[in-house]
Length: 68
Image (cartoon, rainbow, N blue to C red; front, side, top):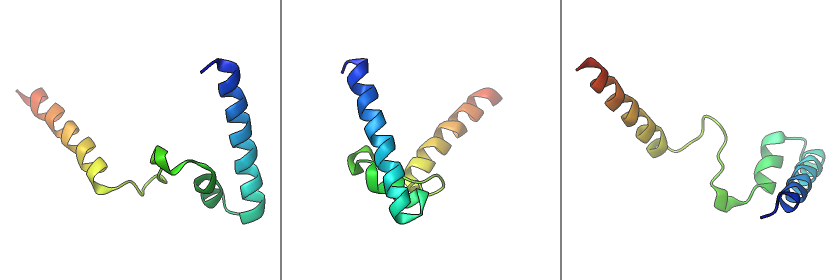
């Protein structure tokens, strides 16, 4: 996409989030009512266990290779 189209999309998304906040008075609800579900956005601290495990597993491998 051209940069100009992306910027217009972002402007619209920000505007929609602000409008949603004004209606709901809750930032979390506002963001997740506007963000597309297909993007898989989740609030910080509420990611599923498999993604945490995958990240933790990678860290463990890095630590093991450092000790050798």
